[in-house]
Each structure stands twice: as C-alpha cells, then as structure tokens.
Length: 118
Image (cartoon, rainbow, N blue to C red; front, side, top):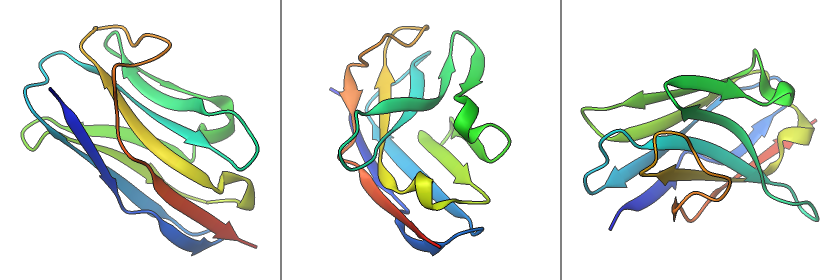
C-alpha cells in the first residue's frame, strides 16, 4: 500500500511562488505521478504529470509550474511560479503503478490548499 502526504500549500500573493511536496511511503518503482487541482465549484483535473517517461503540462500552467521527483527520498514536487488568483485550488498528488498514468490513478494524497490573492 502506498500513502501520499502533501505539504507546502498556503496563502500567497499574485506573482509569488510556492513549492508543494508529496512524500510517498512504500515501494514505488516505475510509477507514474501527477498533480491535480480542484477549484471551488469545479471538477478536479490534472495539471501536470510524469508519465510514460515524459513530463506533460496542462496549458494553463506551462512555463509557470514544474513537476519533479526526488527518487532517493521518494518525494514528488510541484514548483509553482508567477501564481495567479485563478490558481487558487486544493492541490492533490497522485500516483499509479502503471508506467503510463491512467485517467484515475490508484493512489491519492489528502490535498493541500493553495490560495492566491490579488
């Protein structure tokens, strides 16, 4: 069983930066990874992923958000730069044993709130 614990969210002003972390417990060889977010009243959607050997970003975060992994520490990161009020959401990390991330990954963190003020 894999457990994911996010941290690093909080309030930030527009134009600022935050780095989210997602610590994974358990053995996760060749997993695929992703960050999702869910804004109030909206559906959760994927914003960036490490899948099938590639990094794939949603257009809304390209050039501003960077996903990365520390394999030794088993931590997934999301560096968020130039934050905008529309980035306000609950952020979730997700992981799956498949090399290519499925639509609904098997493992999810509890979420961390990011609030961007203008």
